[in-house]
Image (cartoon, rainbow, N blue to C red; front, side):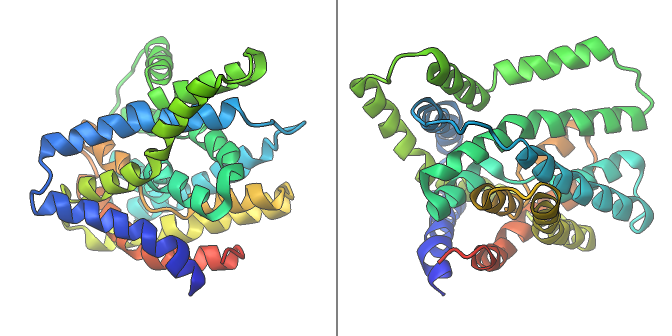
Length: 312
């Protein structure tokens, strides 16, 4: 009960406030977009920059974290794709989106706040490692799958250039990269600069949660409920369980890093899955429905995961 009250309730209360404000038009669409721009372009990059720039790096980073996290991701992805293909009889492109639904976590809007609230500043180092490899890697995989399924023969060099362009124009990735460079080669962070980044960073968590709720208000249950339920179940249960198995028995990860990886994996389906479906005009209905279903259900499942991790 302490886990539910101390961590889960405050997080989802802010999400619910954002949802209500957007649904009742207390905040305009332009206002939501402006807030999202502030979160992704300024607040979260500032928080991650400062966290990385001032933190003492361990002698050896547990790179097994990435194998465990993304290994679990692709296990869930493969199962989700197989179910979509052979149970729901979707084509290969739509099945790729079904796999993405099962393995693509809401790492920024929900993963960062939950990890920070549950484990403190020490959680930010493993979180930034996961985020650094998350979106661009999974986008690359699903892009190749969808393009191949539709018989397109894209230029590999253009695809590689698009991936690099996506990295260097992503403020969150650039915030992490700048923080690493400052940590390794820069002087101690000046007090004024440190306080400025702290002020911006302090806004990241509440604004991210509010923005998540406001963004969810734009989506509707679009049908394909059986597929959405399966995708949500794989995302909320199989993904974190697979990460725990690989991290615990494959790499014997340090407890904090393992807990952070499992918690991030236990977050609901990321909104970008639906946006990617819109881009290729495939799998949008189950994706949108899974985002809403998994976010709602995660109120309970995340409390269970935190309890199993010994938080609270």
